Length: 308
Image (cartoon, rainbow, N blue to C red; front, side):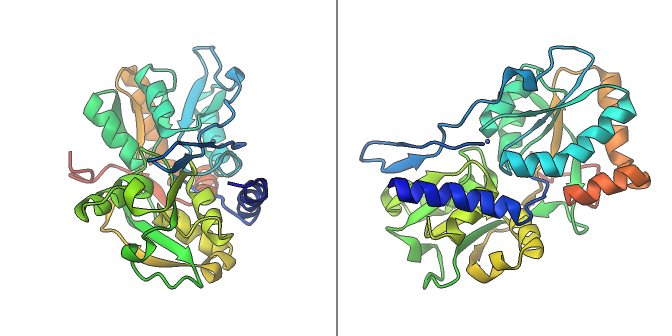
């Protein structure tokens, strides 16, 4: 990747955030890049700046809320901070936003009981549930639904009409644990007898859905797999996104990215967090926080939502 291309990528990420990506989800800042040697031909944007240790308060009385990098840090703070502040006030504790650059790092924090509450991606939850390191608490309801999809998007002028048309092209994934941004497209390729390294000319990991959308908008990549909720919400806020990109494939419905707690947590704290989240839409302050978050309300997980 040339210096000019990297400059364009940094510019477009900041541009998309500035255009209104204030959204849930679903969940790194300055980005470097490291290109793998052949034959993998895979560029991973994972040389990200580690957040300061001060982001996690060692005070056991603080409420520590982990947020996966579904959005880049700027979008995450704008979207989640009102909700975090609300929970802190209701629990009469300082509430701290804890971010990490990858989904796996947040899963590790939950496993070690470093955070009290986690807003994570569906794929990351499935991994944590299988490992027995986290428990499902509540799920967001958006537009009356508790499901979402993976959208494959391309530039509006692209002749591509299906995944097969992207053979040999540059494609953006979100995170190795992302359900919509990696695992689902990987399963489609495997059904075709392919792997990303053999099917695409090159792949990148952007580590947030808004960055993947920006990469397609600016022509950095020929396609990307993104969270449908992030894409739709962003398109409403900024119609230019819908003018400059298009969806060529939609997955079946998946269980929406959930809210979880560590497996080892005080029952009283777990019950209080659940009560506060489920009741937010009945409180004027809570309603405002939910609106910024892009969520109708939090609900009990429907049976079988994640197939576990």
